[in-house]
Length: 510
Ligand code: FAD
Image (cartoon, rainbow, N blue to C red; front, side, top):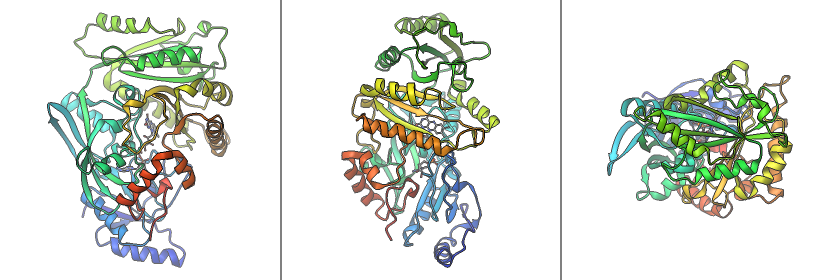
């Protein structure tokens, strides 16, 4: 048996001792035992739950074995852990089993063509970064839809949605997979797609790990470009920024940019939140504040764009295409930044920020992040109340804001988004040094709650992305009229509520 089980020796009371004895005797016949720490940690750094054990399965059969073993107990839960980049303990299992899905990251990797189109079968525990490198280097192909940061697992992002600057065109990552292999909460391993076990397929995508553990995903591919022209342009008014961003995301393929994102930054020389965060290639590029209109407010806006091209494309042609698009935009003259880099450098661009954060201590500090989707109809009010007031001094890291199109999201999936056809993702990616240098994370969590409450009070059409709630009432409110579908699917695919207990939906049924 390759997989092994690591049991935390946290046991003190008699009750826990007996849990350990019963459960472990059922499991240890199949798995080795030792100790670990990663299962009780995540990127958020604010929650910690000790599992009974960490299992490192290397095959889908071993995942199924662990889930089946849990079903034979009266209380054990099972959490798949991708790369542990959740914020609120979502991949943890208090006194349950945590499956380290990275252990099976190389189990599947297979290129295939269906009706002439390329796909790759990858493990649920594979990192997107590795999927990128292998697909580009071995086949000259790449997935179509991404996240910004790629040290996340396939199963982890597909359980949420997976959003980046390509989602306006291709939808989230969940809209770019055509088949899954899933171990459900009964320990059954099922292949599912739009026609076979379709309800499990739709439930699992964006399902926050509630219906099954993704052991394999079939990901749509396209030809990988060689190069990227990466551009940032600055706006002083939210109305101009949103008008141009929305115009860009409704362009057809071949008539616009291949990547559209944006962010808000502070209109000051603050080194973490202000002007200097905009140039792509410092110190070769400098943000000259002399260009900022005198009417500007406390925050400014930046559209981030990219155009893919191939080595064989003439630079004059690329410049002509980019120039043609940029001249339709109303950004502040003199505040345009651009570089040409390889596709791989572009895709791995966040690694530089990761290295910097590791050096300055903010990578390992708590991350009270907030991610939400806000309807186009509320974005101007959101800007006035949140960006210009509550967050006018920044969050110590990027404040992403860019539009997405609802018709690229599949209603049959579990994830819920606002009603309007255009909505904005807003991500407060706080990188704050721990106290005494920075504020306590509780204060920033309270600020997040104040923002969420404001959205409720104002009646905004919004949803949390990567949601986290403490009570079932809040989950019901989050899903709205999709809640009963969610509960019905849970009853079918995980009737004992064994899976992903860290999401805090349901109590384990004995
Ligand atoms: P984990 O945190 O390990 O797990 C998340 C949830 O999924 C848990 O409930 C877990 O039980 C479940 N799960 C994990 N693996 C599986 C599986 N194989 N099958 C079923 N359920 C599973 N998101 C975006 O959309 N776009 C971004 O650009 C983006 N950038 C990010 C940058 C950083 C630095 C960080 C920390 C996060 C970012 N995220 C982004 C959020 C990220 O997509 C989620 O946090 C995601 O869950 C992380 O993946 P993971 O592999 O670490 O999952």
